[in-house]
Image 1 (cartoon, rainbow, N blue to C red):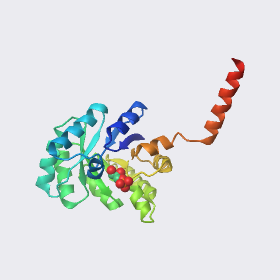
Image 2 (image 1 turned 90 degrees about the vertical axis):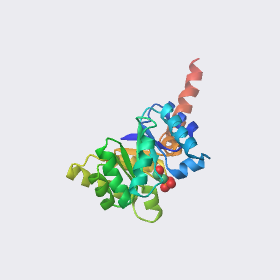
Image 3 (image 1 turned 90 degrees about the horizontal axis):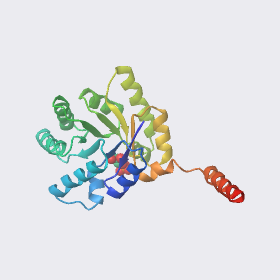
Image 4 (image 1 turned 120 degrees about the vertical axis):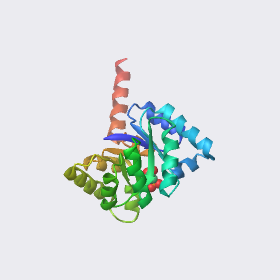
Amino acid sequence: MKFFIDTANLDQIREANDLGILDGVTTNPSLMAKEGIKGTEAILKHYKDICDIVHAPVSAEVISTDFAGIVEEGKKLAAIDPNIVVKVPMIKEGIKAIKWFTDNGIKTNCTLVFSAGQAILAAKAGATYVSPFIGRIDDSSWDGVELIAQISHIYRAQGFETQILAASIRNALHIVRCAEVGADVCTCPLSSILGLLKHPLTDLGLAQFLADAKGMA
Ligand code: G3P
């Protein structure tokens, strides 16, 4: 399973990249706004800055909702860097645009996916990635990981090549469970990636080893 970081914060992207296990980045308009980025030029520059840190897929989301607007915006985003993946919402015009991008060699990430039916449509349109939002599903008392398992089953049965990108990850256990049920990618906040490191027995064991090593000096 690949690890993407789900942020537009350059310091966090650098920190995750320095770990050596980062395979890409996803952003969305809310994450970009959180960094205080305003205006088209600043937005395009910020995506370029991310691409210059991580030489791997970087999802940049369109804000248009009509076919022509999504295509125009997506072409501009794709021109920033060869690693840009155009992130398109799961709406009717979005599906049409994903098919257009697929036919024109532009990679896409179909976002705001909450059902298996939506995931089938994204795959039929040729999306490179499909992004089910598992944390938001959990928030409404459904099981987000079950959706990843269902999509994984369908994609394998049908031979779809779209990669399942589990998004809206809230904790380290989400990452483990997504790995179990066959997600191709998990996009996570830095805190959830670092959460994978944690185990009290590791800390206790290391403290003991270091104490014993002092006795040997
Ligand atoms: O980038 C999409 C997704 O990961 C959003 O997560 O935490 O806002 O539900 P969240």
